[in-house]
Length: 340
Image 1 (spheres, helix red, strand yellow):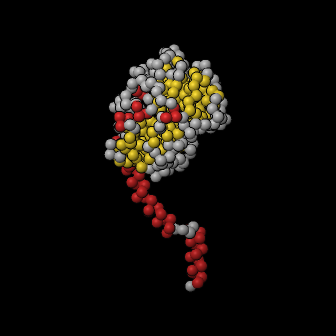
Image 2 (image 1 turned 135 degrees about the horizontal axis):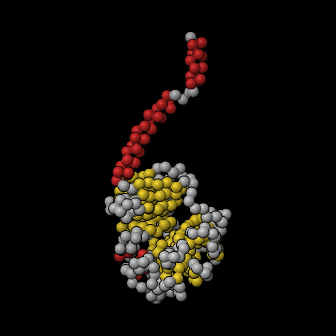
């Protein structure tokens, strides 16, 4: 263990790091918590910083970005609200309402950021909830408001035009949308989603967020991410599997098995330039596991799985043929001799 940050006594749901404002500034680690607050720590001293209080239920998701020189912290909660905070002062700037059910995930639109990963005057944020709705928001220090997702065809600034109540959400899934993922390398700004309807989907911005790819799973899909080098999509499922997909053909490349409880989160780590990354998975079983995404690594994993599946029937036959213990077999043999 490299660093330990302490303080919360309730489970944590989400983590994010503040952007580095300058070469000399330190970064802050934020954590959303079941206690309805957001905790923070200095990544240099590991001392606890400000605690953000304002939600009425579990804080489910947090993101952070620099906008017009100010670092904004944005949180979504089971109370169906999104709150925009001044990360430095801890002040609550805006409370956004539009969702009818708990907000499960937030994702910053990369097309609203400049080449330094910052918002010039504002940023756009997408939100997903447990009522299958996906919404979009224009966020700045002075004002924040909901915008029509279907009007987002490029990186053009969106002007508030219609009342919130008249803006329809994007509805693609049948139930909860657990994760939104926008690959940084994708200039189109399309979104990958993970849902409890047992699918992961690719939503195309230029088509009004129509799903052109749907990946079927045997159970709830908890997370989805993308490896920039291999082009593979990786999903986390409640059935304990970590699946690697070829999105172009919607083909399952491999399913990594190793967790013995639901897999809840994924992140892809980059390796050497031009080399496929590795995916890190976290599970309710209390473990963090790493899986290589290179062709040779995937081939070896598939070969190992094939060998295990071939050995399994032999082990079952051996178990069936020797149901009794050695001592019980000896006693049975003696009884049979007595009968003779």
